[in-house]
Image (cartoon, rainbow, N blue to C red):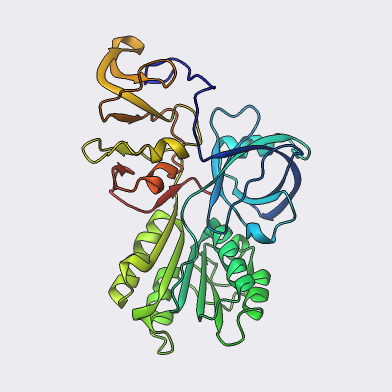
Amino acid sequence: MSAVAGVSPDPSVRTSRVVRCQARVLRRRSLTHDTVELVLGRLPGSPPLLGRAGQFAVLTAPGLDRPRAYSFARDPAQEAPGEHTFVIRLVPGGAMSGWLAGGDRIGEIVELAGPLGRFGLDDHAGAMIFVAGGSGMSVTRALLQAAVRRQVPRDAVVLHGARTAADLYAGAELAQLAAGWHPGARCAVAEVLSDEPDDSAWAGPRGLVTDYLRDAVLTDLHLNIANASAWLCGPAPMIAAADTVLRAAGVAPSRIHRDVFEDASSPAPVIDNRRCVLCDECLLVRPVDGCIVESSGFEVAVDGGVAGPCALVPGATSGLYYNSLVIDPERCIRCSACINACPHGAIDPGYPRRTETLRQPA
């Protein structure tokens, strides 16, 4: 039972920017030993999900207790009509992993909600630096596809860090994207392995991808670092290290874009109601009913007599919530939609204090 007391919301009282549609699993493809690609097709009559490269959607599969958030793994503008592609890493004990392992799932119906997030290409003219760790290549690939489609006339460096060669899955496609880059600019691609056996046939760079970024990429005299933009996608430790390297090299913090993949064990965000201005932007993008509730500021007895906030439900109560919104940690899926939507920085993603996008592994 939820730690936040309240009654079910009145479905007739709802305002949201989130589109919800039904989709069928069309195709499944294994990319590596622990990574699969799912292609979903929107059912006739369901509203279109008009996303862009860098955004994500929330996927609800039959029998799962909570939805999961995944980046669009291909540029939505280049998908077949009504189709959406996602890359999912199989995690031992993970709910989505268990669902996928329960059958081939082709033909099953799932729900999609989105598009969400503000991650995406910027409009600057300087060099582009992409650093992806593990399955962070999924959203990076979508961004690169969008850049090629738009023929962005900017030099680019693309780094994919993985543990071993068995964890790589996008090399051939990255080469094709580099070959299709704007003819007046260059696109260099490198895959960097941190734990590849010494006796393997791997001839590419080894070590941490962030060390390669510092020691090889940022020493390239052809890159104008002061005008560069960077996109960091993957695990939080990699992104923190890459951010430090880029800032030390002179990349402006405002031009370092982050998409951090977290799991459900991460702390739920917390709303600082001293900074909240009652704009309701977070409520308009919540992909899960009840993940953010309006609170009276008073406490009531809930499970086992433990005090908790009293939720006010639009349509069932006055709606006057005295500048108090509460994120229910048991309903929150750590998708970061509310963090991205808040225009006043009133939602703290938890510890360590960060401002980047937080999301489950894709």
